[in-house]
Length: 82
Length: 260
Ligand SMILES: Cc1ncc(C[n+]2csc(CCOP(=O)(O)OP(=O)(O)O)c2C)c(N)n1
Ligand code: SF4
Ligand code: SF4
Image (cartoon, rainbow over all chains, first blue to last red; front, side):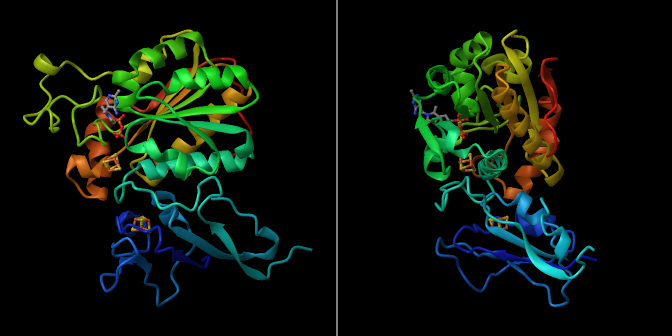
């Protein structure tokens, strides 16, 4: 299984929770302990077991382009398009 | 020899076709998804320097601040008229309008009808969220029968307020329209299909074939009074039956673009 991770840019995230509802592994949560500069609770990846596959489904639904997705891929296949 | 060594690579990040601005759209509003898809398509086609967008009046009124490309702002409903002028004086540019259902289907009904009828070689991105978002959730021409809005608090009564306008069905009847399709932004699979349609519409324009429009069923969580996720479900349950997805006009002249 491919390995990946996401980074949520808290400048753009509005805490709409759409990404949390589409992650097939249920790895995204809303961080209720802090606020973004705009005053929202941001989404964050909670993935202690490294289960994120970098499938990018969360980034496809995010209305604010707040999610950057990385995936470990063989060096000869680095040009992957979502 | 192929190199199987694993490297961490970038799969997705905010497209260059969007500026670094934080949008004023409400959390979870699908205007943001539509903006992203447009920017991705324009980046992938490599036409950002040649593209001119036209912003509407409505929640997308500040779209010119969010797209990293040339933009003009039209008076309410007049984007197709402005697009007509821009495209006719600069036929090498890629010209698109971005319009809500109040902008396109009520005050701008005349402009869109005639732009399509004339077969203007422009692309229209039509955001159908069944309501006037910016002004506080009044009934739009696309509001569903029975739907509560601030101006139809008891629900849209077709006896009193008339029936919804189905713009794809109407515009596809016109000979000047060559690519008229309806897609939806309510889930990932449909967002992917919407992106392909936007790409196709721009390819149609690049091939000089005539008028293209992609209608996108969209959400307005704020004025519908729902969470972002509930609003996406509402599109699926209530809007899809009233506004069937599909290709309403694909002129035989359109040759499928490769890839994507
Ligand atoms: C000439 C004129 N008439 C009326 C208005 C008020 N007005 C502003 S936005 C709008 C409708 C917006 O609805 P829609 O096009 O569906 O876009 P949304 O906000 O839902 O994205 C209206 C009637 C205006 N700005 N100018
Ligand atoms: S979809 Fe985007 S804006 Fe919404 S909570 Fe997730 S990261 Fe934040
Ligand atoms: S009012 Fe509705 S259409 Fe306007 S930004 Fe908010 S959710 Fe989007």
